[in-house]
Image 1 (tube, rainbow, N blue to C red):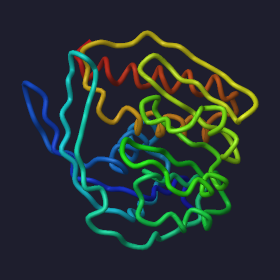
Image 2 (image 1 turned 30 degrees about the vertical axis):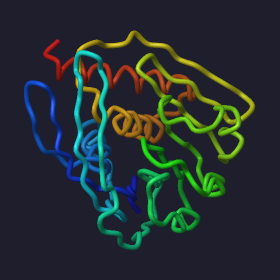
Image 3 (image 1 turned 90 degrees about the vertical axis):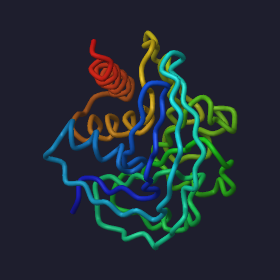
Length: 224
């Protein structure tokens, strides 16, 4: 049994800022990198279903990013493995979400990225934790919480809000200026999975630690 299995998009990212550019493995790659850094002992199974490319511009002064992408140039069936945690990237852009209902025997999470609106919201009934940014929210947060079988966690530069459609929570942080925010959503997911699997803390405490971990990483990247 794996600790974590990652499904969905694997991308080649071409990233540009005003002062430099680079290529990296994105999507699943971002989650894997953070999981591997934070807890190398975790066994992580990789099962990409959609292979694509993205061209990304990051404005570090405004802490914003924008991209154009072909996320599903090639599509293959998911290879499902017994795991403590299954995570799916990016639910709204997958060509085929039918495998999600087959993810059993562990916690199931997914995230939403910028792009298409999720066409079939019935898939959310199989999701324990749905991660989404404020700019990608396509329903009222409470209404979205009623569609999942667990919690929706909405993250943004100033913190997070979460709900199961009834109960709500919120955590605020000080926004970090002049940093590369690319991949922060994927980093948040990885921190959450690691903290949830390795602690028995309440949801609010786990989310607080997720933001602390991302803040530390961004400060390190910025030389602070």
